[in-house]
Amino acid sequence: KEGIGEWAKKRKVDAIIALWDHEKTNRLKQLNIPVLLQNYKERSHFYSNITGDYLGTGEMAAKFFIQRKFQNFAFYGNKGVVWSRERALGFKNAVENAGGNYFYFESENLRGGEWTASHVLLDKWLLSLPKPVALFACDDNFAIQVSEICKMNHIRIPQEVSLLGVDNDDLICNLSDPPISSIVLDVEKGGYEAGRLIHQLIKKEKKDPFNIVINPTRFELRQSTELYNIKDEYIDT
Image (cartoon, rainbow, N blue to C red; front, top):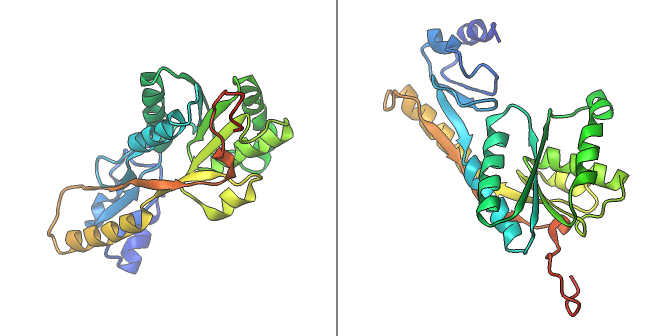
């Protein structure tokens, strides 16, 4: 991270779009060029942010499950990042306002050896949840972790766990068995707005930091949520 300034000066870049975990610092001010940060841990107060309506996404997920008559709701999140924290809060508020039971678990983004060593707590949490449960994962990567743990423990999706992710990553969602439903984000519009903002900053038409908000747009439904929680002997769910 320390070398970004020198790298940018050497190449005479006109603007920077970056994903990094130094949102609370102002290290790039010396470059005197537009900087956009795709926020990860927190939103930057110094630079423009490419961010999202995370609270709204969580609320959207909760309403999706509430309409399907669930009583038990769970959120699996990524520890220490704003986009997961706010999705959880939006989900939790909507669930509790509807009188549902809310359960929460978070972990680091498990990869490689970390997965082997650290999935045990997630394993126990999933087994402890009352079934059926509507489970919203903070993104598709975390959703497929849930899918794999459920498979290992013979927890049926969607009969016992109705599973929903975010990002609609086709590769990840369709690697799962069953495939994972996901919330689609308007990333194309976000890219357009980022380009327009850079142009405005370079032309000095804007000076102050500005947030580009990427909104959720719709659900891409797959088999992981194809179940309504209706208890009626005359209705086959």
